[in-house]
Image 1: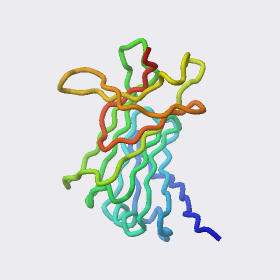
Image 2 (image 1 turned 60 degrees about the vertical axis):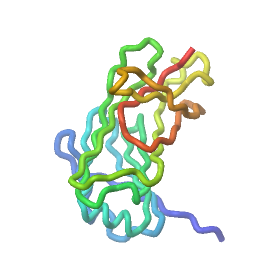
Image 3 (image 1 turned 45 degrees about the vertical axis):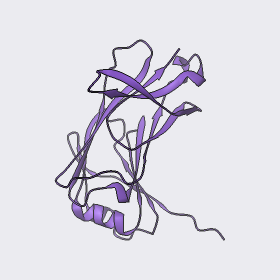
Length: 176
């Protein structure tokens, strides 16, 4: 029988648009588990993971998924800083007629961190807006050039998925 990692859905403590995940949210976390933090339909949210929660995720070699029902960020626990960390997920209006959706993601922590492994970003797209699925791509906003730069992605069944080694302002566009 093949080992199947468990999935744990966490309902964080909520105050306004701030969601806090403490270590007691997953007392017994299986090795290689996937931990899903649901912030249902929030288009502007802060998700705070305490240092103890991050420590438990790392001990279990878990994968963290932050989801608002439209967009998901998937982080290997090894990518997380060791200190309390705040993730911001904010829907953004993109002034471009080819834009399908836009989000600004930021991470704040007392510890410096670099991603050792790629982060996966998945966005649900209203398929009625898509004319040619092969032209649907994810771009990030380059703050230096002030332009959107394509990073790719695979569009299938109303979702686009891309792997990246950074967090930024991302938009999904149907590029002609």
